[in-house]
Length: 438
Image (cartoon, rainbow, N blue to C red; front, side):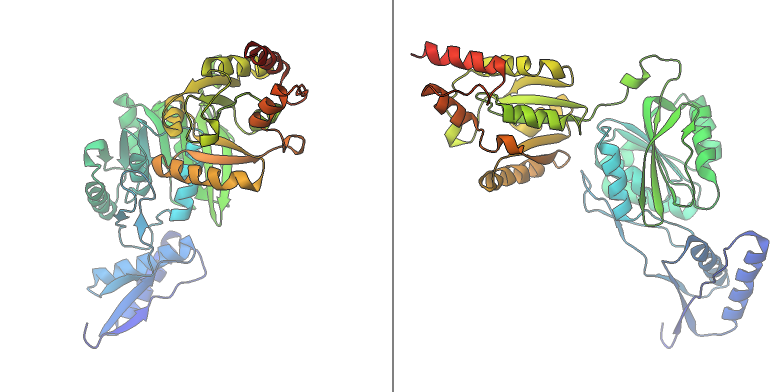
């Protein structure tokens, strides 16, 4: 650039809206272009109104041949999944507001705590450079349809899809959301979820939700997650859409909607349950184990007590009860909590079993600090194998800190009374088993 001097485009405190502010932006650009030999920079922060003002000034300068660069813009990346770490392009211009990685991570954390993206068909409205839809594809979505009208954003979107290897699983609809939704409805397109990030300050959230319902593009039980400014209050309901969760991150709000069929009596059963797996040898199942299950049911919709057919723990290689006997005992002990609490057995990797039963969480009980080292190593290995399956540690209740299956068997075999340490159904089977062994 030789002897060019840099000038940082100033922002104003008044909102950018209407013809008067456009004339103000043009006048500022005329003033700046009167000075030659300058290179102008636009900063990527400030309020949305200031960013739009800066964008208008920058656009006018560029149209008149002045060199303009974007300063301080945030590089976007894919957070996790198949394209983890891939850098994404963002179209230049201050009117664009790409979702920050922190907010994007929170958005998908909220989403995946209740729904599975595996094989889902996703619609990304006001897609911009496609960061949200691409993140969904990276996390296992079968397809994504992107709706965006800006030429610069469409160019970046196509490049980002190509860079991540998702071009064959994506469809781009290069028009406005207002025109795209009726078209998709006429095509009888149906989606499992919608990612919605309309421009701030234009009251588009409620209007777009109504358009989604009118176009009839949502499957029963579909989700809609919307990003909005915290000053914009998302509607509690919109026809069949029901607001189920909200979160705030700075000036950004997230709203999760679920589509119910108002004519269906079973619509409440459509929502995927939050399922967790509580795995162990359970030889035998104790009141300490039962306490963990009961407390876990206050957090999760369903808990599967999974009896391991094999274990890497050298202290548990010889089982008193077979896996089938342990499952039967646990089912009896959990009778009052059925069907929310069930028992099953598995072999192989625990994370593979979680995937088979649709569980996103593993529950592990901790009695003492000595338990933590082994459990922590297992949790880290499980995360390495399946990053989407989280491990939740639950401390044993104070009445059960000393209760361990090994001690229960040892005390019972020596004639000690263990009736307060195990459920009644387990106690009777334990006594019968010890007597049969002589």
